[in-house]
Image (cartoon, rainbow, N blue to C red; front, top):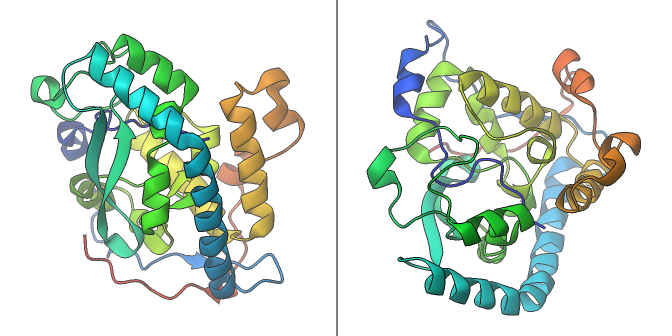
Length: 270
């Protein structure tokens, strides 16, 4: 169900972030405005969306709890350290929260490498962790984040607070993505890989803002369908063949229409 291209320790390194040139003379961007492309007003839809996601997360938690407990036991038996991994992330309006995952890397791995970008065939990933990642089972504990109200099922991926402060300097409008609750899955998550540099973060932002500009039930249903296909390995390239999500040319080459409805501006505290 859940997918996360940028796993917990595979987050931006402050050194390459600091080396990039910030956009001087730009003020911090205001929270994102949302274009309404459905008959449901954005404010009302967000309330409906939250209720539906809570209900779905509750049902999935009941079904997934035996799998989570079994996977947690296997993590404890096969490597040193806790079964679950927790980390502070930034939620809607800049509010920090604790995200939950099954641990897939060696315990306290950042003490060896420090925060870093995602890399292919990361040696810190345990043998069981490889399976958990490939099957996306390591993300199942985030259902508890949805039940707690920290996250939604669909939305931008939550980032670490120390990196949000760096990225908002380097990428104008980066904090616009905090206008809604972060999601376990989302438009960027089903279409792009892990972050590797500031350019890849900037590209993901285009997808997040595209989602915000077209927030509504039609877009969310398409992303849910694309997520199911993604978890199955995208056989026969079904995501593209069925046009479950907009293609990259539409997102990266065409600016969204002028906003006609804005979300309430949250207080950005992180």
